[in-house]
Image (cartoon, rainbow, N blue to C red; front, top):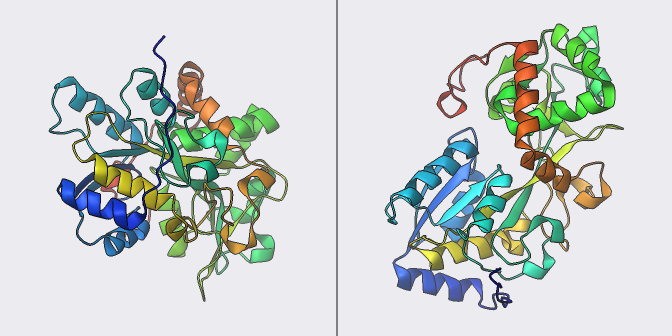
Amino acid sequence: MKQLKTLAIETRSLDELYTAAQQEGGTLVLRAGGDKPDQIDYYLDMFKERFPSIKVTHSVDLSFHHGSRYDNARETGGKANVPDVIQLQTVHDFDYYAEHGLLEAYKPKHWDKVFPDHKDPHGRWTGLYGVTFSNYVNIDVIDESQAPRDAMDYLDPALKGKVVLTYPHSDDAVLYQFWNLKEKYGWEYLEELVATKPTWVRGTAMPYVAINNGWYGASFTTFWAFAPQPNSDTRFLLPEEDYFLTWFQTAAIPTQAKNKAAAKLYLNWMLSEEFQGKWLQFPVRMDVEAPGGYKSVQHHNTSPADFHRFMLKREMIERFRLQLLQLIGEVEGDPPIKIDYSVKP
């Protein structure tokens, strides 16, 4: 078996890395998993402002699309379409790519501060930031005191017509949520939940858009900031008892990437306190506090490592996906990246 060399952790400052990226050509090509075109603008705009000489080309799409595009680009044998950074929710892809020698071994600065479970020990991939799906509610539609927090709350007849959920058989993260509901409450719970007739949508972005707009009152299949925005009528609420989903959005540099200095600058900035301290949910660094007064991810009823293990069980996932297809019905609507988010679903 090939022995991997022990890698030193990056010591250069962000400014030094910025200079190296400019000398390389000042270009960065990023492929980011997501389901709404502007979904990473929050932090990508910060990166562009911090490093204005770097020309960033990026696209957001479902992670399995980006993964397969990367696979196809590799098959051509050239670098023309290989991105400099792949940043995906499909965490099992990184295990495959690492095992096949397709990822650059690199440990950004502050590597030692990243939670051990959420980075490859040989530096081939790292988590960048936590993504938690849980209860998102509009308190103008549902009084905060009556907002659903745990699974059984969503069976309340008073919520009829107020709940919007992502099709679980169209998104692996939501599928994981439904798997855990089945494991705790049984298949009967899923049948009862479907019988309440929530509005089903494609993609995990539409629920937060719909709740922000007051079209619906609650969802547990979406993401938002832990700390509410000033004068906001929405709240992101963790369960009182139930387990909830968190994963760390993961990134790596392909071995065939053309702009590795720019890619290293990006990874170092994402793991810097400049970014980690501004992230909306759990940081991936052990020494950075979560916003909204929340404790570290390790102090909550959630396990990003368990989500990673789930994602590796592809046969089980596909069987469960087909079970939910039979229970809920075919996925309807435009692909998430093409949805008109100004129209109520």
